[in-house]
Image (cartoon, rainbow, N blue to C red; front, side, top):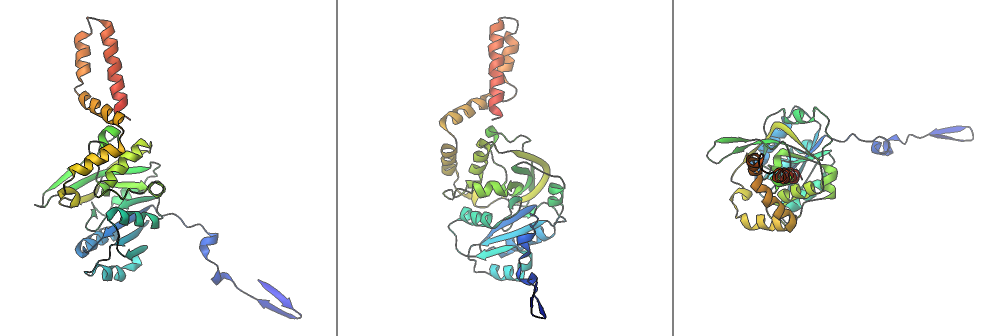
Length: 294
């Protein structure tokens, strides 16, 4: 910019004062990796090493530390060049900390890899994001590591149905959730253990889309709070809070129609006797299959 004063011309360069983000939209990272930590320095180091070893580098790392007192904060300060955002402050629980991380995340998808959690191998993020995805939630397979050292590979179902998720869970560390979804529907902090499980039920009922990725995403260490705590009471609370009585009763009925389908067997037995029975039974079979896909 320039202006004149008589025979003098003055030039000014305002470029250093202008934030480039005002004029150039930043490319959204493929994924925000959110880590919750408190006084678990060894676990934090393992998670850090797993993240930085990824061959795909279009990620940001966010660490929410619960006011650790055993060297964790110093470690974060030493590696802050690899961290997009971190804080060390008290929180009211793990899901409060996770919601803090969600608020700071800017990635297209979010994944929670808490201190001690690790990716299955260095190519996980590359294998996930080599293709474009539209689903609200991507979920993969995982490997359990037990305290005695043995491993067990777990395969997630290809279809993410209400019937499945109301009976079983998917490892949180094996799931990539759209940031826009979690910012709109954060975790319910009244849960102590199962806010993530309740979230999958909620998102299923909201008709969010799920895509199964048939790859190993992470190692899951058994023996944590969700594995050792008395979970029965909170599980019952989750069922009552997230599922209406009508849905609960419907799911109980579906439990009776697993393969080999008893109604199909009965239809075969009656097929040559009374056609009306056959029609009614086949209607019941189709109805039960329809309900199972809800």
